[in-house]
Image 1 (cartoon, chains in turn red, cyan):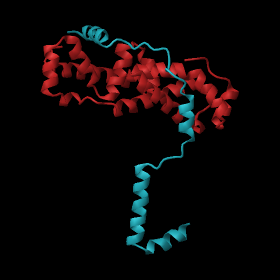
Image 2: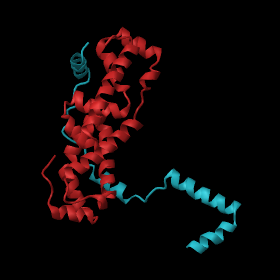
Image 3: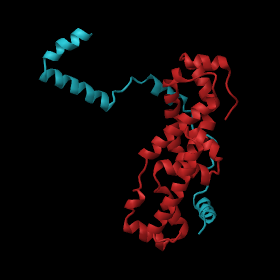
Image 4: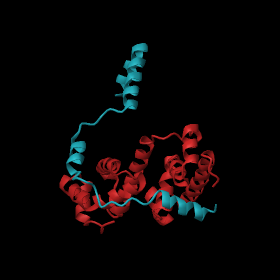
Length: 176
Length: 69
């Protein structure tokens, strides 16, 4: 995340000054966008989430404490917005409903395809943690901070994600 | 297959996404969203409809409401 903005800019943002808000947007948009892409993995969808994130931040500006980190605050908002996007863009059925055709295709195809199908079928909360921890290899403390949950919750979601992934692979005819 | 094997296969199948930033300037889109009039949520509409229905069914409640406001 970029360096923390001036206290004066943050104070003006809290008061609702659009110019100060644009300055914050320009400073943080790239980093926030990269963070969102790590979770949703589709740049087009990530752009929508980026707009949603800063819209939510502007609406919640009165609750922002200017003595705290703006970067950490906006990242938490971005994480929540990205999770909402994951829930709404979920096109594939949950692993319990993987149909026989999908299973046959995965078991006939290579292991990678089965892994992609199984991974994408994880519930959004587990998928987000798995993407950040296993694919992006981010520290669990950083993920916990972005999700505003204890590190134990991240560990537990990661464990459940791995278990669900194995279960989904089994259903696809792959012995993990 | 160990957890490490599974992670290795996962990273090979789903590599990290490389991106530098949004493809276009999103500030105008954000400005339009900020300037858009607030939209009614379904729950707000449902509550309003419930209040109207309650007042139609129990007109005496109007005087109670007037008393409190």
